[in-house]
Image (cartoon, rainbow, N blue to C red; front, side, top):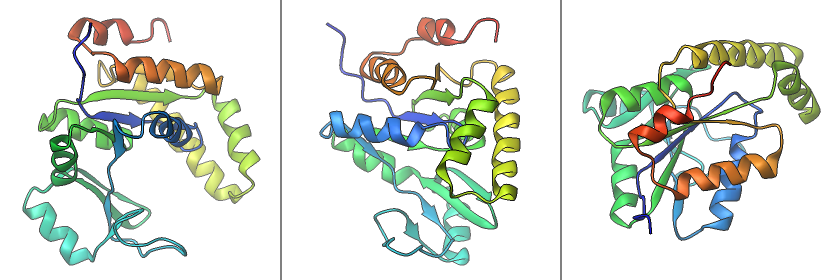
Length: 206
């Protein structure tokens, strides 16, 4: 029987690919085992958001202070606001024997991998095609044309980087079918990822 694996899970993928839905399904199916990190951000709360739930809302000065203290596993600047995942939020949950899920972009995943501060497992959720992703984003009905184009351009860059990322991710999941993608994610995160698995998980000929 495999030993329980409590290593954190880093999940990345383009906006609209469905990674948030997959994470929600995982949390709903295994509420006592998995938990999400709460990031720090300098952006103001949106209606309905409260400090300590969706994000820890802090000032630019507070964020800069945390960066100077090397308090973040990863941090980034997005649309004029800073976002970061603190090391403390991960270690606190690990102490409770919870598997921590970090939903971060590719640059953040690379920072976590390069720092080596936590022994994480890395998953990338990719769309079956950019055309399918565009259809999903348009189906939301919440994107302006300019926002949609920016998201698609970002996705195109991520896909190109994925194909040349040389082992950044241990598992790549194609989100063409939600239930199939979830089962693939669940199987991976409930198992034990070894160096051999990392080599086997890389998509061939993509």
